[in-house]
Image (tube, rainbow, N blue to C red; front, top):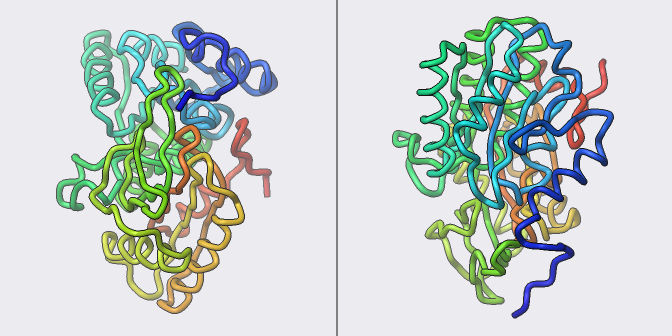
Length: 335
């Protein structure tokens, strides 16, 4: 089947999408060197700053969360590909306002290679930077082997927690500590019912029959070992939420963040039906939803499916989640 996407040249996709993104949000971001998206207020930031990296093609992630209260510089690779380490080192230098930099990397092979090389070079140059890796996909490794877990939508609330802590004027070590505490207590599980096409090659990322779904699908169509006949919304919610609760050993009386992240072609109608069932399950178990989000944060082109995310919350994390921020795709007004 011929790929149908509104693009010009496959070689110019990343360049042109970033130009359009920056033009559409010129009040919040600017384009920097090496395909970077930069917080427009970065020069005035007298605090710890935050840098992240990742391939294009997952919009609004990751650059959609650049702005006050979240990310300061996003380093963008080609479609579904990590950027090079020198671009990330340059971004850390650009971001640093004298208070140090938190460098957030999602756990995927290419991103980790870039992240490790970046940290080696940063150490050689005497840069003050701490790397935080998000790795919360419960499908491909048990919690005791969390270093093998893929990073999914959990990066976005991690940006929010870290950004709010930085805005309070905390030290680099304090910002990294609270962000790590949040990241250590989060879990994500994805499901797909239809794959996406790679916009640069036209290749299908996942091939599912019309009557199939796959629980545990990775960010780029990687299998999760959960291929099964299509289930109803309630059945799917039961399977996924109970797996997440078991992974985190959530007990009655605890507070959770619950995010349903659409993968690109799943409607809000479907997500709200799923959310309704999740709330029913949590109410029955005596677990409070203390923070939530339903919508698209990190997509996979036109893949149909969603990611279900939970995180254990406390009063401090709830306050940081609700703190003000202003980015193209996530905003919180002062309370």
